[in-house]
Image (cartoon, rainbow, N blue to C red; front, side, top):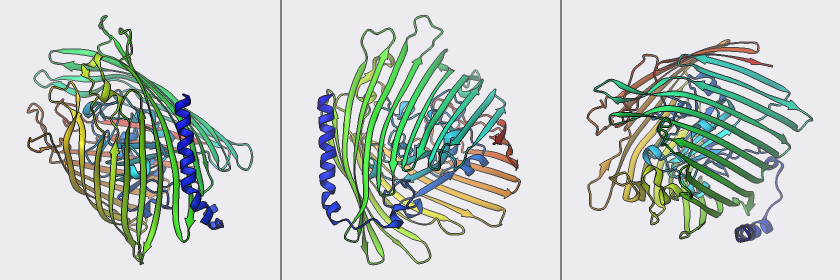
Length: 629
């Protein structure tokens, strides 16, 4: 422990020394800078809005969430072009995640600006370093999605993009709300939240959410027999509380959820169950110039395969992470700079109930100084982001990487922002990928190397227009991508991965009460090992969505349609037809009461999502009522 804190102190001292020349040349902080809201924009610590970030960006507001038919975060994120949340979407029983640009474990999830990533994950069906069920949709205020390499800003995993979930903060006055929601498949959600104003700048808040779901189809396990696997049960509790005072904010989020589901393999069907617990704590200071964070989270997952078998065993997964970040905005001459330092300590543990010893119990620490600046070149700007990552690994070879990102961008007088961006990314292998899990027949591979590569983006956007729009073309390549070997017994480095495509969105406000949003994404991804031929990804290449909105007090309505095309399933048992799903929602608000009726999969269509026969959600009807006080 002494060794760990000695290194931490040394790195923070280095960061301070790095910024000293800037401090000496610093101009007096202007009143305008001091009044900047203490919120960092995802994708850039210099930008004041996602509209200024030289990348393909999307924002989902609380109003967007309330007006949609979404039941959870996976549903919400799937509305974004190029973000795929189809797998495990049929039920709350199994872990929920998304892919971005065809990648899952290389997508970085932030919660209030803090990386929220586990250490015990694999690839493919086990390739999600986060479980979206551990962030309650009732606690989300805003979501910002930035496509492309973000490792120069945030570090490991940010290859496909960065998703920042910004949770709800206390209201400006003492207030609260209650929500009750019910539907078929035994769906129930209850939420209560409130704020108490203790003084002009001291606000205390708390919230609780209960979620339940009954029996739902999740997979066509045996088409010949018409046998489906079902999610049998889900029960979840989410708690949050905290305070804000001036530039300080503290928030704690805790929860637990348990689920059971069928798991058919061959001629037999097992009954699996899982219990999860999570804790997140964040202390944040932000005054518009200085930003500092201390955070800690602890995730537990207990998984039992075929729990009805007396010989079955339980596998325990646990992630414990604590960290700190600090950065400062200032000017050197006329150039804006951000200097900062990040520290993160991870502990990953896996054990099995009938094993005497742990499968593994490992730690590693990250130390990362970083900086950003923007250099004017005529009417254009050249943005630079630099980060150096050093990983001190328990019982393994240390890793380090210099990660740059460069962007040339130009905003014309009409508000159009043109940009060309090149970014390096870097992704550490997880403990699970390195050390394996003997209970699930996964052999460790101590020679796994970090994934590395570059992403290139060319785009134009106008997010401030009456009819905002954006379009982007990208190419990415990756060295040493991690994947399962052909026998599904060990994680290996694939020689090369590459992907190219384009993404766009256009929102047409064609009437004071009506708008239509068109989303479009095309992805061509493939990989190869050694001298073998390139093989295509199993992700759909086309992702096209359309959302029609109506708003006229007291009514709000939304009709959304999503199309996924050009798919490839190698298992001929399942039809690889194109996917087309329609959702709808209508709400009515008078005074303090809101009533909403939503329908998921309006036409009750069933599609097979992968080679194992997983399906999309069945038709769901949900009625909710919210009262504000």
